[in-house]
Image 1 (cartoon, rainbow, N blue to C red):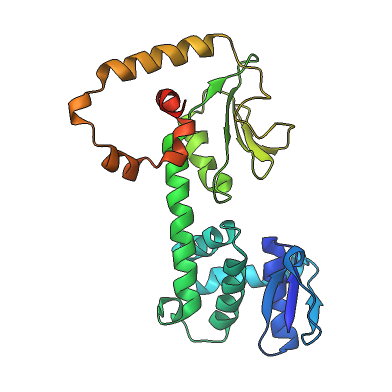
Image 2: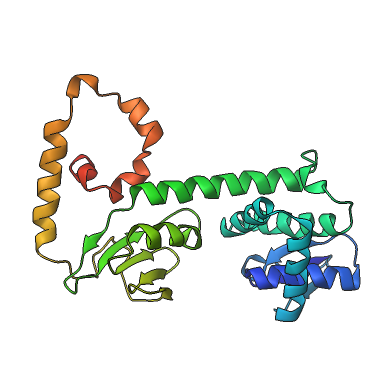
Length: 252
């Protein structure tokens, strides 16, 4: 049997509740948008239910420590369809087993969730390291990003703590939403921007001067004889260079 859900965490948790309520046997959890009709398999559309989702989530909080809760959440933020299915089956497995089964790395769902979570955490750390803001005309600092995974919820605290004295926006161009910090709270925002980094945001004219000065400084302090491109790319993969002002020359 196939369960169809809308991709939300609430929908995924509701699907777990529905499985325990119905006990239909082996099922596959699939995003509605990815479903291809199959005449030989029954389907059930899962409709979000906050009460049911909360009961499952509260159960997870009881059964798992905070590290595993984060691991589940990170795996969900990967947005990989297979990860959703693994989270669903792991949760069902957890509630049907004795305490401590999350440590059973012989279980394919445990291994898969750990793998997805590790990839998301790696992306989170790289975003924190490589994001560079540019000042807009209104004084707000802006950066457009296009991460592989939905890491905005994970980097929120880092930037709120580190840049508490300035207003900033970090906008995920792929997912068309962003974080806006107004010196008090961080809010989700949705604005009209193109797919090109910063192209729809009017920048302060001084930004070009700052960028030029930084590139000149970076170039003057670079020791060509010690250049190790292979090692450098291992630590700073090329797909992140577009966020770094000092790398813009190399991208041309």
